[in-house]
Image (cartoon, protein in one colour):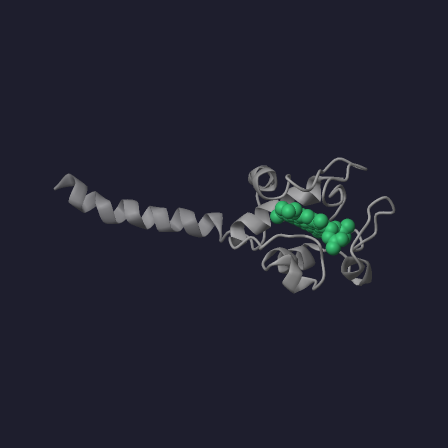
Length: 130
Ligand code: HEC
């Protein structure tokens, strides 16, 4: 009896609290979670240390960097020709599909990251690496 009368009240206050907290801001990735995504998805080929190139170029300071811009990494012609800056939006687009589709002729062999939340987390993390 007690619980039945109280339940709607509890449910209503839950809705109210949810409304006060507001919706989750769009693209507010979790950088700590993004570090894990980086480790499992990218670190085989990329380092975040400045000047440390592996199979792929260092991703230190990648957010805001022009594509194909590191002087000490040997890029494919495809990426040398890429005329864009790695903004969060561009990274989101690039990582959501196979790299060879986004940039035909690239030597990055990666099929893309399907999970949008993981992409946002990863891009937030990359934004802290500078
Ligand atoms: C199997 C190896 C491999 C994996 C895994 C990989 N990459 Fe790459 N990546 C490369 C290579 C190689 C290049 C250089 C491509 C070229 O020159 O065409 C590259 C280039 C890039 C570039 C362009 C850098 C620049 O200086 O313009 C970005 C951005 C990038 N990778 C992000 C990522 C992210 C983020 C992940 C993880 C989600 C990832 N890559 C996973 C191999 C990889």
